[in-house]
Length: 152
Image (cartoon, rainbow, N blue to C red; front, side, top):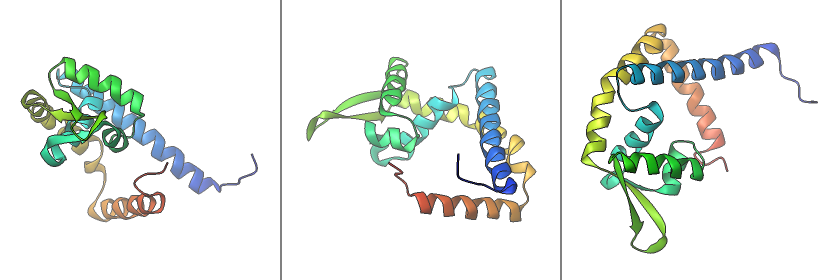
């Protein structure tokens, strides 16, 4: 290990990943306790909801939810079995597939939102004033812009 990081930057990094893990675990637990879809399912459903025609190619979905293609494929299998989305063959490419949000998936998303929004507010937003929130947005946007939307 030859790379040196100062303590402040290393602490910031560790706090970021720890806070992220705690927030995700806490909100996922709250969704489970409220008998709503798991947070990982919610992430897939919201990406489909926000996509044109509520559909995304599997590779694009994997990129948007920051999961491997094989993990997304298994996740889509479970969501499809629950009737929350369907998988359709791409008309121009028989090998490609789209995940498509169903009405049941849209309803599951709506049903989970109030629990998710409350978790964001309670465990994240209420601890930041407007200046701190603007700083978060600026800093993370700088990192996103530096790395790009596709780090691969």
